[in-house]
Image (cartoon, rainbow, N blue to C red; front, top):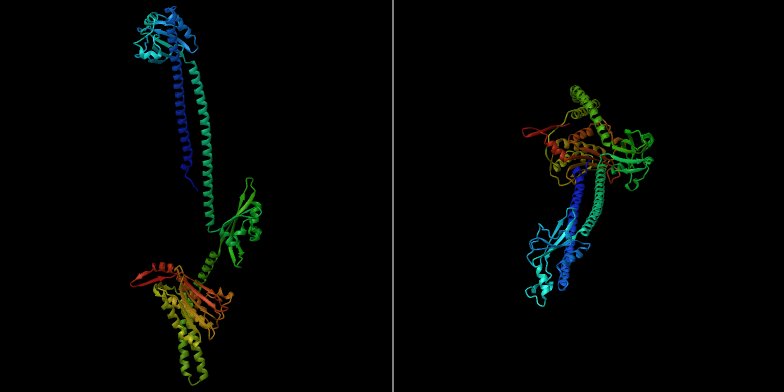
Length: 598
């Protein structure tokens, strides 16, 4: 049994892998953006620092140029002093042709550079990151060198008031020059490397924690999935066990009931509230049934037939099977006991026996009846002749009349034998049940009056139903005649008919208040030739039973009926569905339908 398809079991794992992959992408994007943001912040810091240093160089040059001691060489000294800052790689000034005018490295003064900043405005600063031959990165800032003007005076550039001639001359020398400042990016690289390491560590931590969380979720989800599967499997197994056609019990090594279904308790007559943990030995003999051998030696018991006395007093035939529950060491931890109700099988076996017996009796009866009937008619003719010949001799005439009466009785027995032996052809047609019951009552009404017995009917409002009306009338007639012979003068007989609530079966019954039938005789009354009356043939009830069987019905006998101290009730139960099924199996011949009974 597979509760969940295999594909469904992989869906949670695939989902978690997908979530982990998405989480990794998000962490990567977040880390990249964070590093990029930190890089931008570091570059802005370098830019502000470099801009401040350039302004500082301009301010220092401006101050020096106002002095009478200022010389052009002083500007180179200023650049060299400025370059001593640990964050500065170099600083130089180039003219508008790209020639280095002053450089913090004197050896490079006078060289011509292949790169010239593209600056168009006085306060514009151009930046770039330059890679040196030793792979060192330098952040360069380039700006017009303007020692003549302070930043606050930039918008008054055309009106330099109050400046002396020396200062004007010195500053005019550097008009169009550009100062270039190279900032070391070592601190930036260290910080960036530290940020990258920190980001990698944090990403690894987040990834590990996320993976752990996802794994935990995966484990929890699998746990719930497995738990759900186990619950569904358990519920499914419980439903299968509960709806088994057999009773099932599991017991431990001491014979205590561990598990059961309701059918097992019903067969054994145990209560549900007391079954769990109950000792099965108190209900079933372990040694006799072989269960003890199963517990001791792990030997299974195959279909052992036992008779169990139910708490209602009924002896129930059961087929018991026991299978050992083995542990890992080959020992026996308990057993599974299966109980199969054999009552229906026993009934079928009895029916088979009865059918075989009836078949044998029928064959014998058919052969004997024909052999008896021919000479019987001759004997009756001679007896009637003697009765007329001896009319003047009363005693001899009485003997002759007795002969005729007894021959007639023998003829009735032979007729019943032939009726019983012949296969009964069913003529199924819609039959008015009310009319059928009343007709059967009218047939015995004269006998009832002579016996001083009151016959009453109890009929519900019934429609026409498919059946062989003649045969059912014959069955009711036989039951009524038996009742008339059993009921004393002044007694009562009731004949009735009704449908079950589900309208699936028809009930016909004949009830009397006679002496009833003893329990030891009820099981035999439908056997051929069994009778309790001196002049009975023993075939009337056998014929009734055969008619009912041909209609796929059943006949029940209760003595005394419920609510009475004496009497007997015969009930004929005919399934309506079965009758309709029989109706569909007719062999149509014109307007008449016949069915050959079993």
